[in-house]
Image (cartoon, rainbow, N blue to C red):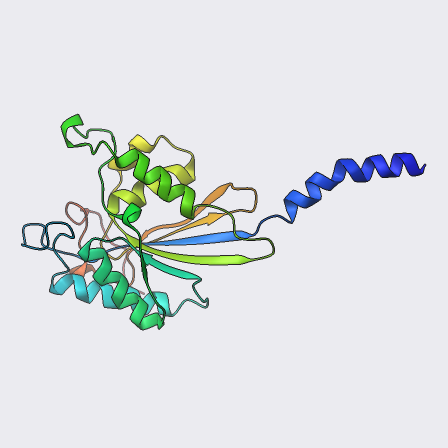
Length: 221
C-alpha cells in the first residue's frame, strides 16, 4: 500500500510543481500618440509627438491611471514618440519608465508588404521581445506590465497571442494611444482580453495607421 502511495506521489509531484511554478501575467500594450512622420527629428529616435499626440497621451494616461492595479513595470521603446508617450503615462502613474530597443517600430513580413520594405532584423527583434515579456509571472504572483510601443509591434504580438500567422499583422488597423491587453497564463498559453481600445479618445481626436475607418459609430449613451 505504501509502495503504491509513494508511486502515486512521485507521478503527481511534477504536475504539482508545474502548477505552482508560475503565475499569471498581463501585458498592457499602448500605441504611442500621433506624430508627424515628415517632421525632422533625431535620426535615430525619429520625430516626437505633435500637439494631437500629446493630447492623446494625456487621455490614455488618465485612463490607465484609473485601472485598479499597480504596474510592476512600465517600459517604452527607444523611439521619441513612444518615449514621450511613456513619460506622460509614467508621470501620471508616478512610476519610473524603462526603455527597450526591442519594442521599437519595425516592419516584419506581412500580407501585402513588399519584400523591399521588410526589415531583415524584424522577426528576430520581435521574437526576442515576445520571449522577454510574454511569459508567466513568478509562482503565486499576478504581474501587470505596461509596454508603450508601436502599431506593428502590437499587431505582431496580437497574432502571436491568437496563435495566428504573424504575417497577418498588416491586415489590422490600430489607433494612436489605443490599449491592447494580453493575458499570459501559468502554462504559457495566451488570451486576448482587449484590442485597440480607443474609447478614451474622442472621435474627433482619434488617429489611426491610415485613416479613421469609415464605420458608423454607435450612438452615445
